Image (cartoon, rainbow, N blue to C red; front, side, top):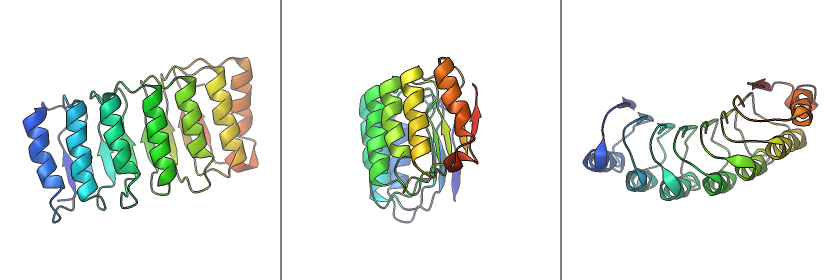
Length: 210
């Protein structure tokens, strides 16, 4: 089995525990796991992350949106992401009650192991300008291969948009899609982002939602 989709179920503690025992089995070769909207809470994130750290090299796509990650859950996920054996390429954490410090932890983890992640979905969380600044430092890393970044409805204002624009101008970016609907850029930030398309480092970038 390479793909397991369980979204919309009530996994609960016992379900996550059973699933974690599967994930840590060295014979498990699962590559895609969908647990969107499964009533998973912070301790369940810990169990999943711990299991994947013990057997991290096969998982490529992890969908965890519409669950309650919280500070503790994101901390455990971050420890998985910074593992050099982690080969995750797509991580979905939209609608997960993630705040600014959680964005810092995620960005820090991905800076230490940046070369595999291709898609990061973080919409409808409270990134704020501080959280986006941390993500911007990841985008500045020449080893970052992120291609799609979803930041819709993340409480981003001019300061955060300016940091994003600066990061993308400074580094020949792999980023192809930047989703920003539902934030609050002023006229100057909108102009900065619009001008990115003309910058030689961003010629393939599409910005959605402005």
